[in-house]
Length: 152
View 1 (cartoon, rainbow, N blue to C red):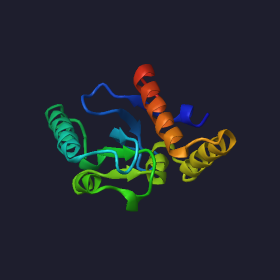
View 2: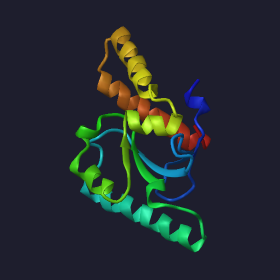
View 3: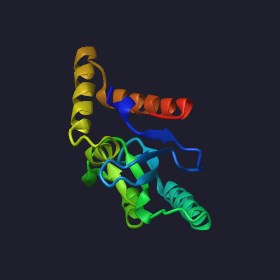
């Protein structure tokens, strides 16, 4: 599957969910993954910024070539205009990539998100179930698999 071909791994760095080579700029990204555009609260903003600040300090000490835009928040589904004010606050310092944009950076395929959404839609129609609940459950399952297996 295309997901299996993604060059990403679970991260061992505190506060970072996955690390991957960005398909668009070729740089290693350190990503905190979130499910959707409204899934963080005000306290989460400080936590995320703190994790990125610590990683930036560690990179400086270890002389790693880390740029500010190498630390990102990846929102698995949604549109940029749906991002909460909390995500917009983070986006003033670190990129917040959402939906199609996020998946294109991860896979290199501009249509990946559209195909993913279509697949979810077909399952929802066949099973006659709540689509948003299904998406959230699937996202949680994928996140757990990444953590448990150490990679995508």
